[in-house]
Image 1: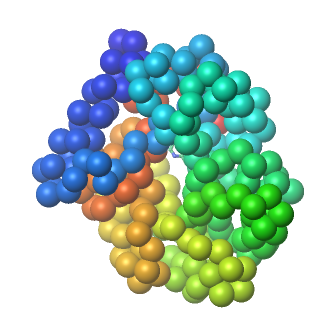
Image 2: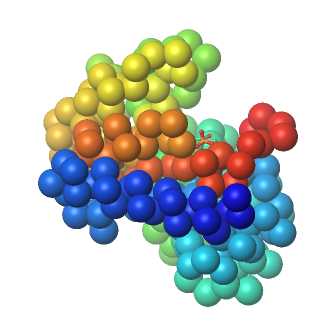
Length: 223
Ligand SMILES: *Cc1c(COP(=O)(O)O)cnc(C)c1O
């Protein structure tokens, strides 16, 4: 099936999942995760009208997106992968939304770059809801305090929280936890749900779902 048809199907499922839980489909942003795919794979999805895309590596995004942006006005680019503080400059210049703020050092680097470049990407704090040692994100018990420090110490506005539940667990309790933490932290956005579970996430308040393989197909190499 062509990617544009898969995109249409995902959009239908997104809208249905929203309506079934009494939500406005327009309140859920579909982030099409294009990591590992080249311009020739992304262009049909742009031609089908999609404008919000997610990438997990700053350098890969820098190589692909400036040319695509010149071709297709109105692209909104989201960083959904880990950010090193030495890439903060490039990330602030390129991305409109950064989902992976999880350390003071990153918060400080972003604050500095945002002031220098006079650019204000929206920021989300990544929460490691499963407390997995290999996974990025602040611990759930630290999330509210970390959001407060981003605001008070670094002068950053935090738009929301993001999570990637453990691969081998029912994601629903993780989505519920993120929703609770977002309420406690006083932030509006919840970035949660991927190809396999975005409908569940919408039922639990997701404002941004990050869908890759269900649109672009199988990735040949891990990202
Ligand atoms: C790759 C990735 C996705 C998309 O995953 P799919 O299962 O292909 O939909 C979503 N979020 C993050 C953080 C990712 O790295």
